[in-house]
Image (cartoon, rainbow over all chains, first blue to last red; front, side, top):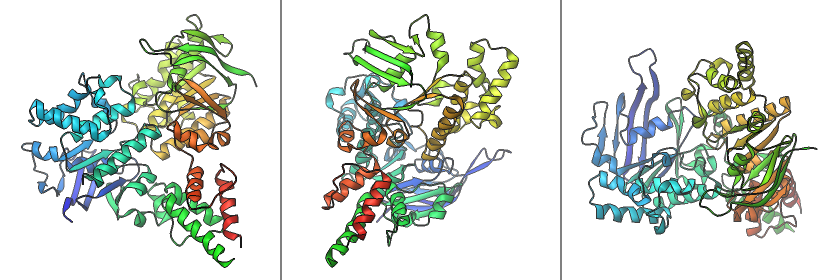
Length: 291
Length: 277
């Protein structure tokens, strides 16, 4: 597989050369393949947001370099000529509905493509396609985005990013504050974009159940460092280490631990409901075979 | 137990919208922790705003601690109710943490000396005294909610309403805030109404009321409510974890007579299944 993102010894210092200098990223080296669904986890202040802001060059490394879709970003990279690059790396910030501003839904979604030089007609076409992707009914096009529900507003904001047809989509806690239905809709959208549209997805989240249910790859951040990288089943193994990282266990792993205390053994800690139930069914089935 | 809030046959609609509440009644008992659940748009937050007199009823009546909610009583009522909103950013007025907590007291013309004492006590009770000179904007989400709660505690309310107050926090922050409110509730004999769509938050309540499209469709203990995971799903809420396991087991042909079990019951049942020869 091709690399979508490659960081080499990236350090980012906030307020460099002042007494307040603080390393938000500390010598991070990591690769993300094209088409992967990567979850970035870590407690508040561990460097997750700083990391993803480098991926679309909103922040430049203090030292080290990145290669994102062939574009090399170094400490001396300037904001000149970054426009074409940023179109390829879509960024959905936390509470993106706060950035809605146009008088109609369709105008708000068209803003991005037009900003990148699309004609009205092209932009409208992209916007309508993006609305379909996020499941917004056509009839909402001419409504004010501010008359919509919270979940719908968030989808308008995400459609505004998708209308630019990015190759990489970064989602910074995209479901925070949504009700469970809204949560599932957004997560299923991310899955669809990844599996059907082959978009590379980067998800910052605090919800470990989303990590095990959706991600193929996990980056654990702690004190500005990428301390563990790998598929979900390699991340949730060392319980003491997870506690030290202030990370929760997925619900099924948590429940399996309680079952273990009650004397039911697991060869491997289950991470999803299906994994847990498969093991239980296996144990029950085995006994049944002896009867 | 006595009712501290009585919502009696109220009707309400937002301007140019159809009726959200039509003849809704609900009592809140003094000292209870009531979870009000329902998906976005079900009317949970609107109800809180009507109780606090932030919105005006079309018909019906609400009394808070014996006082009818009306223009005359509005200040008294707001002294008795503290609301913690979803987004702490929206509720800061002070330049420093200390100023922010003092704001409500200044508004009520509390003498200066007394004010210092109350601010100190309130900030200490939420574990934020050492942050008193900080700028609220530079605090974490959980810290901001603590400061917001300190501002409420300073006014000695009888009722705290958490309006999705933990939904923007990470899991650690959420647990910390809920524990803090539980402690404050005990120490200050408060009544708590928590408006939430977080099933785990509702699980800690004494009583759960489900609001759907402006109507109360059920009220029960948390276990009683969770016993119908299908209905929770139908109205867009998450099923509690044990319900998901029970459903997945039944898809594999392992079924129980019971519709719902809590964690302990489910563990006991699985143990029994596995050990049965």
